[in-house]
Length: 178
Image 1 (cartoon, rainbow, N blue to C red):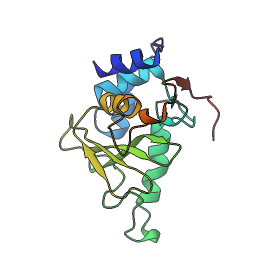
Image 2: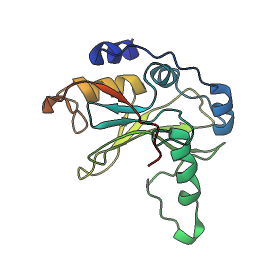
Image 3: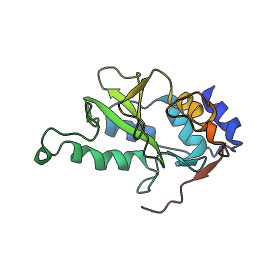
Image 4: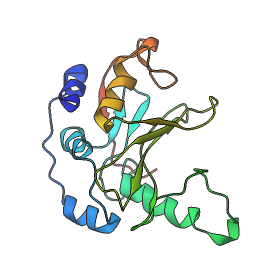
């Protein structure tokens, strides 16, 4: 339902991307949200409304959530940095554990994550933080509902962008490494 709403909002023609989700979920040690997988198969990674970055599964590309996670995990677990995490009071998800996996962000440095707990597969609350607004916000909604509300709901604060009258468009990632 929410994926369809995002499609209608953007006027996007679904791409029908094929992905080996079993391999990805095998590396993570947990299944990913079904609606996220559907969003990716429809859109791929890229940018909504010229400001909301959606991380997909594009090996070696800037919009690849798995590459971002692989880079974040060892940095988050680096003992030379002490007990400090970039996502405090949480940690980056490690297979078999509990932590965050980023799936989106904005040009204003807002960040969107799933809180994944290997002992509770199938539960994927969205955790988000807005740059300069302070603290984490937890949402008991799907990835696609959260994305839709960001793009279309003027009252979805501090994350909604609808009040800025940006075109609700989608541009696929360029495929260039950043």
